[in-house]
Amino acid sequence: MEKVSVKLENLGKIFPDNWTEEQKAKGKTLFLKRLSEVAHKHYSGKIQVIPKVPVPGFNWFNVWYTPGVSKVSTNIRDNNDTSFDLSNRGNLVAVVSDSTRVLGDGDCTPPGGLGVMEGKAFLMKYLGGVDAVALCIDSKGKDGKNDPDKIIDFVKMCQHSFGAVNLEDISQPNCFKVLDVLREECDIPVWHDDAQGTACVTLAGLLNALKLVNKKLSDVKIVCFGAGASNTTIARLIITDGGDPKKMIMFDSQGGLHKNREDIKADKRFYRKWEICENTNPNCINTMEEAMKDADVLISLSTPGPDTIKKDWVKLMGNKSIVFACANPVPEIYPYAAKEAGAYIVATGRGDFPNQVNNSIGFPGILKGALLVRAIKITDNMAIAAAHSLANFAEKRGINPENIVPKMDEPDVFAIEAADVAMQAIKDDVARVKMTWEEAYQEAKKGIDYSRSLIHSVCDNGFIKNPPQEMLDEALNFTIKQIEGK
Image 1 (cartoon, rainbow, N blue to C red):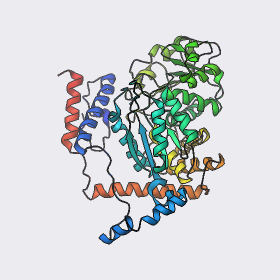
Image 2 (tube, rainbow, N blue to C red; image 1 turned 45 degrees about the vertical axis):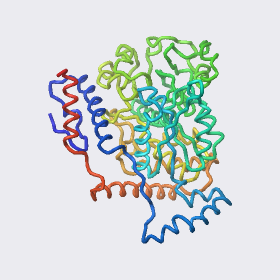
Image 3 (cartoon, one colour; image 1 turned 90 degrees about the vertical axis):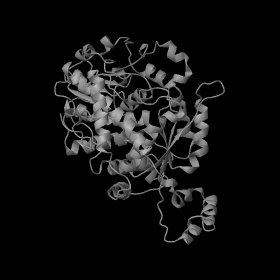
Image 4 (cartoon, one colour; image 1 turned 60 degrees about the horizontal axis):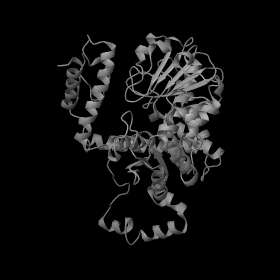
């Protein structure tokens, strides 16, 4: 049993050697949850606000504030677009959530989403060089029900302070209306990372997985388990990028989605699910056993497992099958179990397993690219461009069944992704600013390098200290006691 390192390396080796694979998998989850709890308390959250300008002397407050700043206000009044140059708006994202679907924990109340939203802001800053602020709001109406129109109104009112909006952890069906309305009615990009971000990175992973098994996207049979915002958007992007809807079957809690699902057709709020019903599963298959026969791909974003996806289902799949089990925080089937059942390539949303198909390699670069050209929206084409950018980046440096997508720590992935997204925004005529690919790449790289250097500098100079070893030891001891029942 190894000592837990501050860098959290070799997590699989910190547990007793006599533990089973299942115990180790459960142990990782327990350990990370416990460590997260104590670390957040130790640091009082993850985000603080610091200035980006110097204070050579106190008279400079007359420049940064009144009376000098009056000229900034009147310039923006006369031309609102100058707000992107004269304030931080051009590099600032609002992370907006009503916290009604936080990871696998459901409705956590508005402030319950702060941990995730601050985490999103942290990743944007470190990985994409983008500033972000967490805004967890109460979307309940007078009847006590969550009202999508309240989220829509809130975002439309505050959009003038931001360069883009990242929607997060909003339950369905509200999330569909919120995104579709705001994409059309806001003057800045509105991005739903649970849906579009997950779809983008999943498509990237699928493209490379198919290369490894020598199959084409247009030819493969795909089963989607779960019909929430993520999987319905994944299906839409796969189809837009060349997948055959007739070879796709999606399941919700009531069975297969198909043209005879009158329950979905009758509820107009679920119009995205109805689109899937109309365009996929022409044979109206209703059981997973039938759907999984000779399936090439399973994409699951459903109830956290580890027994949500059955090994017997995976055994029914075709040769060199691909399984994406991406529920958080626990995959619907553990990778070792899926491989025992015959899967050739397995991906999850977890960084402590191979093939992390996670939004973290998507949204920082995508939002940075949209901000660079001051896009008015993020199109599906931009999301698909990001997916191909990620897939191509990984393929160039080499892929294998345990490594199908880039990792967060790979140099240049986010700057290249940002530049590719920026170019697609220009092609789609949604960019306010035109630039070359090289200009976009260099600008993105400069911002990312600055952000990382800033964070490392405050750590190296002792303003932010490493977590104490006692914290890691406590989390490990807690986990061992929980697993062994002591």
